[in-house]
Length: 236
Ligand SMILES: Nc1ncnc2c1ncn2[C@@H]1O[C@H](COP(=O)(O)OP(=O)(O)OP(=O)(O)O)[C@@H](O)[C@H]1O
Ligand SMILES: [Mg+2]
Image (cartoon, rainbow, N blue to C red):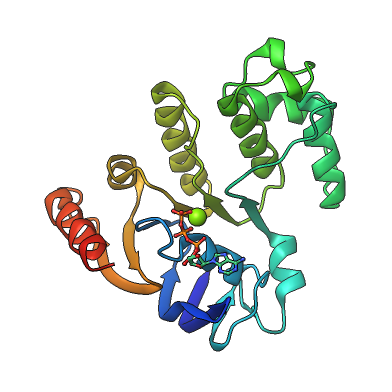
């Protein structure tokens, strides 16, 4: 689904992705972790062709980000780090509006279905987004992302703003997506959540891949992940 090789991204005169390799297979969940400024959001933007590569390449759903970004974006769900909603529209209207922009046909019933999947309280469905908490906004954005029914979803800090029960629900949700054949790349600061659900965990520091962990038969070695995370942030 994703095969990135030696990606280099320069921003503001700095190298923020440095020869980054990354791969994500079908029906896999990859968690991308790392300290603030490590290059996680930049990786997602580069994979969507939203910022140019200064070196290397990435194949996403069989297309190069250098030449096929439109097609990649049409087939890839994306939850931005700061999911924006229109305050004067309701949850349902926001979802319908963003889906129409993406050229996705949907029905009121499927929007409600997605709200149930993310456990957005029913009273919020027709309320204006200006009255929503951060977590409710996040749930609307996640629901909208799901409604696109893409084979690949890139989530940038999907659990930020969610309460512990909603975080657990989110992890079950992406496990269900994986069972249904979707591949997921998830940027997260939640090491525990990542090790609960992911198949692979990749640690970034200063735009480089400094750790690469696979789920073993007993799950992840969370001590090793924490140690690598701390070591990466000490030198950063
Ligand atoms: N628009 C920009 N112009 C210049 N530099 C940028 C820009 N956006 C990000 N950067 C730099 O790129 C580097 C990587 O940023 P990025 O947003 O990818 O980090 P991140 O890992 O997502 O961090 P966080 O956990 O804080 O979200 C940082 O050093 C940041 O300062
Ligand atoms: Mg980020």
